[in-house]
Length: 397
Ligand code: SF4
Image (tube, rainbow, N blue to C red):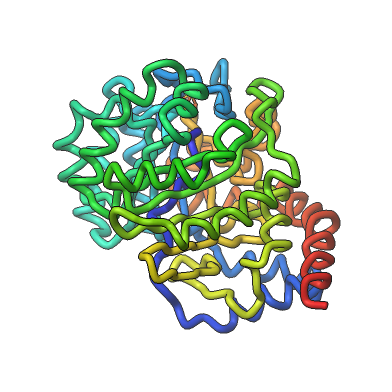
């Protein structure tokens, strides 16, 4: 699955940011009203994470894929147009840019754009974090490009043990990705990430799958959760009990025999309220353990004596066009909250690259002024937040 911003390279260090820690504690104890939430989001005038979907084609047809767009709403951006978006985003106050496809390495456009992004970063903002999210099956001809790109992360989507991966991605899919996975682990070390979508089929053997990846050389595994859509396989949907069991059984990794250090990142955010609420019910969650990283993301982090590290990327507020945005192949800006139902994309566009001269700051200003952003925040504050506050109140009594 083309993840939202992928693993984003995992936790971006640590920041002594007590103000933001206090904000999240207040939010989850019911002390943040709507104007206060709105003001907090506006402290992110430039999105930290920008994920750019540079093509609309893929060599696989995965059962859980949400990113199915039969026809683009407008002409896809050309290479010169993407370059203008890249250059202005690099010069802006973003922290991380990622290239997604459907599959970046299918055809020549994605690799060409990666080459251009790397070149522009070298000239404009060498410190900027950049990454690529791929299904990993087509990267062999591009190994030199990837190795020289100094990526912060290369996310390769793997959906569990070989038989579970093939059941989701098609026969032979694991055999196609395995040599590239091993190459990436060897060459990129901790910058090679497996990105795994947890769903009904792979959940019962999740820990086994993670240890299998570790045996292939992988040190970092990022986990997000399957999102049902009317056009993908809703039989993969996880129940509340599945989510609870998932968080319970993660503890087993802390006692496992590891081939090398292993960190598992789990994304718990408002995109998957079922996982977020299960996390709050689990004994992993504590208001006292919230820490901030340098990308202004809250984390809850545990280290085990066997070299296992469990990190929860814990983002209990909407992205709302502030923290993370998605740019589609046509150059439409979407809030990350709106990416899962592609049929609604035409109704959810916050701004477009063409209407804003391919200028990233102008696109973001227009996006954040969109009435859609206010609706996302208002609905969250009215519906999901009270549920979160109720669960936290129960867990501390
Ligand atoms: S690899 Fe699978 S999940 Fe990713 S874009 Fe292609 S079909 Fe969708």
